[in-house]
Length: 386
Image (cartoon, rainbow, N blue to C red):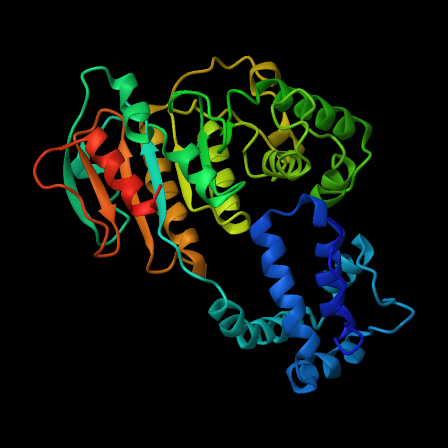
């Protein structure tokens, strides 16, 4: 489906350029993103000139002219132009002010639906429930009846939820993101990402980055990203899906350790899914990470087992410390978006742990007493209506 066309001749060129750049990547946008840009475009077409008056006055002061910035173009050179401009901080403030005026109208058009976010920690963390989720304020602790076989914890908890939600609410509406492949049977409808399952593709990316770095072909991360934009996961399960292929590539090349650290991948993929796809259901399954070995600059993209002779060892305590931050980050990220406000149940658990933290609206109800995982699964399904 081609992108929609909007008449933006009345919109200042720096604002219109950003919008049109998003439309050029239309084939790699999630349904939720397309819906957002359709709402935004329709609003901007009818927006009064007063909305853009401060930006229209600022652009000439920045040196924006038809020659330096032709309408309809948004290149790396123009990104550098903005970043290097002495008036860039003022430009950012004006753009923020415009969106602060626009967002209430865009948010009012979003219809809220019950949503569910599950964040699952690994077994073998060196702490008990009293030391878990300490950075998250509010909620209630719920006692759980857990299986003797810890490996059954995730499958019993999630049993069918993701696929049923995806079948009811459409593509990319339900996600499972995990370090391994432990959260139940293969999914047929929902979106599933596994750090371990992407091992071959991660290896290819590392090799390509190393070659580029050794040849000195790029000046920095932005040029590196452009260089690797076409390296899609041909050996991964998302090879035939341009939306997910680009999502996986961008997630792994974010430059924040997603190639190297399993839990960083889960955290970043989860928050990017929330930001972009706005899923009704997301389960993020963390694991135990290895101790990170010394690296610097573009070597953040290198295979650490091959780059250094230092032995690989599991980091139990470091995993716990990281996860306390990641739990909070996933929760706070969802709260930024109108789709998740006042209608989302958050469940924070750890495999084998006999207590969970629940933050949810009053109408998310759970059976009383010691709660078996199948009963929790049924309560979640009822909440989602699937």
